[in-house]
Length: 61
Image (tube, rainbow, N blue to C red; front, side, top):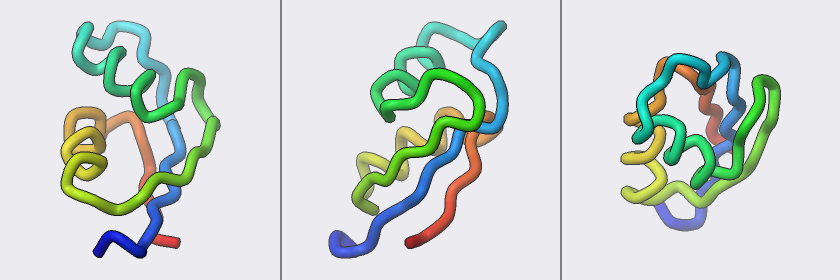
């Protein structure tokens, strides 16, 4: 699972989100809607995605 990558795109704004959600978006390297990053597919990244799953779109690369 560690050789796969995930393409994470922020699709909604963080305005009105909790501090934990804001910190998670920043930790993922996102910040504004339509920003996209690629991250390794590992349990840590999956956990971060779960916290903000309603704000992001995830694709396997």
